[in-house]
Image (cartoon, rainbow over all chains, first blue to last red; front, side):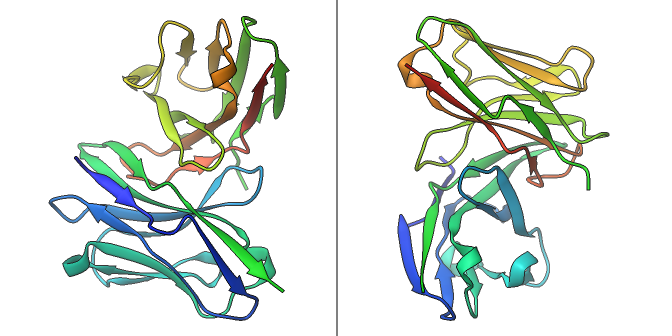
Length: 115
Length: 114
């Protein structure tokens, strides 16, 4: 069955340090890949997406992610985190055909920023 | 900027009571989703609408949950009777038809069942 794995339940990073959040998926073909962010008590916001083409995609808020087919991974990165990046981050895969898509979600990684 | 509107933001109810959540998607978004999110977990799809039709409600506990989108615009999710295990965040999202995964979420409705 298709699945999305985020191995880290939470990660603590110092402000100004670099960040990498891991995401692995299980799917036969190249899926549509997404990262969403959820600030405390809020809904989710799309950070970036990968459909095809350049495997390094840029998103909002200075985030980027790299699709690696050989590793079935889509890791999220940021060169220098800010305290406002403290949130929960969800990786997701869209599966479907003919305009009918379903999102398979990872369990999320909570990002904690140390001052 | 257009947003997905949800109400109420917070709801406290006693078990066995009825509760309803409302969602108004972004204008022009044909696809509407209701998700349930338990603290510390990812969203779980309850129901997906395409216009007024249900596309997927396989995870909706139909003995107590119902959802409708009568005119293909706003939507209501109802729980009757509420149980302690229903305490969660209920998220509504919308998207353009045919746009895989690009969902726009509301701020959610936090339900606490006592």
